[in-house]
Length: 426
Image (tube, rainbow, N blue to C red):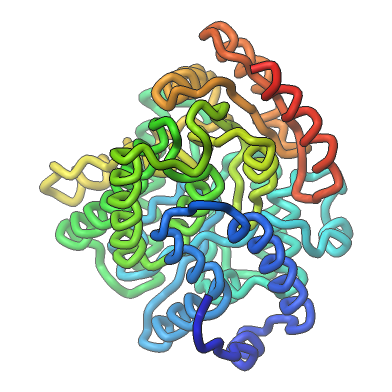
């Protein structure tokens, strides 16, 4: 926590936030954070950086964004990792992930959307409709993507309230789709140049590619350390690192995560862990877990197991693959960006057998004892893939458990019972 707390209410008021509602949200998130993270034993010292970041989650970072905008800089908000951060940074803008991981303002959302809309969509619309997210209010542009029908229609509604631009993501990975996606990336280049007034050249894009790849490499180091037994870091803390990666300052975050990774390597060498050696090891896959959604990890680890990996957008899909750095021309670099991002294996693609292979590979690489497949309620994409994921995991000789949940805590008791029974079976 910050030693000298700063009162940011004037800044939040200038952004148009509903101060009373925002204070209630911060209070709830702070209480949740303390119970989930600060109650852990033997945490790595390097987690102090992320604790500080979270203590200033709507404070210092928002001030940094506002100061950047005051100098003419542009901030771009995103909801999905298919939006290439490299292109945004190459134009001199900053990219921030937007809030979509808590149940807030659903009463207002359900006045314009069906009640049986997935929690992630209802969450980001709820944050906007109730004016409690300083990130979206600091964003000069929000870039959406066509990863599901619900999002596509939600972006139309969000576009009535904010400056929104949507990228068309192909739903297959044929040659024709690769060509279409490359054209979409080139349109993004033009859009960012229009927004910022800065031309994207080979030099600026090469620098952005290396910078973002550096962030991914730091997260890869943390992920690799989790293969050890005992695990040197909890799944909750690892998940938090990936969540914070979406909106923190890139060079500062990369440096801090490399420091954390150095500490984890030392803990592995010393046989030091956050759980007992031989604790049951779980890989979680499925719908991404946006801030501040930590429910499933918390339940698993308070039941005595340790989460050793996440095959999800707030996990391995975010950092596993790098953009090739050998391009010399702008066109070659744009092609490399397009190839890397279309290579991500999301449930929005058909067929999606590569995701099944990723799950099995990660489970084996991280020495997992079982796999929990988690879908948000009414997320048709991931719910439809539950059975194929279960079949693939069991065919590889590992137990699997599928869970459908939302952001509320109402089902925590039921989930605890099911997860405890699953762990006993292992």
